[in-house]
Image 1 (cartoon, rainbow, N blue to C red):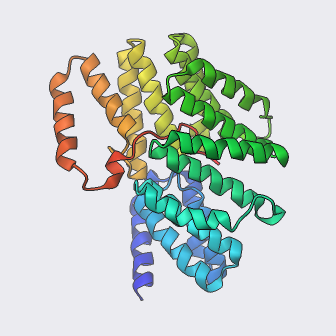
Image 2 (spheres, rainbow, N blue to C red; image 1 turned 90 degrees about the vertical axis):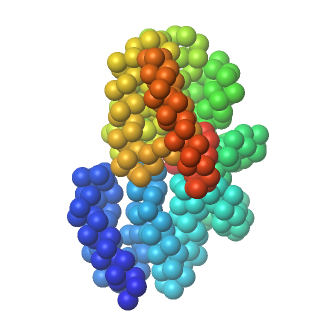
Length: 331
């Protein structure tokens, strides 16, 4: 009875906020509502949870736990493991990264890369582990996972996994202020990409990161060019989390180039995207970008007020202090 009431409530919310969802998410929700049995519903919910980068956090919370419950009753091993991954991704979205790792690690262990039947899931989960560690600024540990991922993917000739994770290695070089090293990784990642649409998310992340790298090298024209290409592709993909991160980086490029009107509009766009995913004000990099903009435009009072508000929030939610995230939070 409780789940029926919760489902009804979510249906009502979906009707009220349909405009806030991507077309992909709306379509996947309709599949959930149309499911006529638990097995079909589980399949639909797991597909919806694959959009964990773009879906509202509260909605992801509800559906990931429902997936876990349904998988325990009707799912095979793969469905149960995917449900656990969905729960781990939910914890990550809320900033509870240690809990996310606790959920993910045993599932990763029981899906070894050496077995063909579990290899794809292993690559997916290992990548998420690296992203979780990066979200906690545990970059050395994240790199260890990423290097092993690339080595395993090269062994099994999985070029999609190679390109995605080389890009993420490069993104850590950006965080460590080593843009030339980062560009070497991005170039290698592009070498593995093709015109196959499966590579589009990887290419989007590479372009977004290249914009950041060229900005660090004070090559503003190249920075703006690649950043805009990344934004355009993430809009096309309807990947809201990566779009918001790329907009945040793009605003920093504009601020550095003293193009403050463009920076302001980009920050407004970023905030609107974060609202759609219920992530507004959560990420440290977003907050720093807003403060930088206020200071650059001599709006010191706004910068101080924003900082005071953040201090008043304190640690009410761990998600307020999750730190940096990679631009290419993609699979």
